[in-house]
Image (cartoon, rainbow, N blue to C red; front, side, top):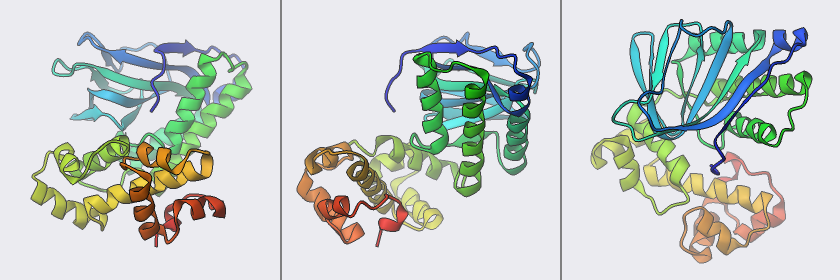
Length: 289
């Protein structure tokens, strides 16, 4: 995820129709370094508003429903600000970097109800999940002062809510053990680096032996197969969306050179990277043999 400038943008639209459907109250990107950062529910003045907050780096803590959740990179929450909760930067965290959006409207309320009927308040999303990509787009539009009216802002808010619905329904919070979730999130954030099963096991806080067995049992593949599939899919996306050379793509997804990338890509898909690019095939999990 490309680093952005830290800013907060607030909107106060008066059109009643957009308020009833879905609307943006504020959006921002922050990096907190003081343990004085602390938000508590039932002490905030606003009514019928919801905060979605996604951790980019570092970690914070959410206390909700009598439980405590650690919010490290790749984890987000959606909370009703009138509920009883607390989220803060703990003393043992050097920083908490996050992007957030505050929304209101009937569609947002229904999304909140759906999430809390089907899952925990903490949602796991990789950086290229549709809700996060859409959130980054809204933030970029706000940064460039291109959110100009209530109807445009309402459209952004509604699309973001629909992306959340779809993500949670189709793939969002799979019932994986916490350690395995942490390992997959680590891989999704660091696949472009020189990482392997050892680093994934470390991210899971499990022994290498236990991690490998549990990963295969819960995902149906080995850690190296998961990481390889992730890299090949990212490579396919770059082949489809960019004109980068095969060498550059290999380096962007964690491979040392184009020859090795080509070998792994052909073994996984039955095509060379060049053949895949010429096929103009839209990247998806269907590319794997």
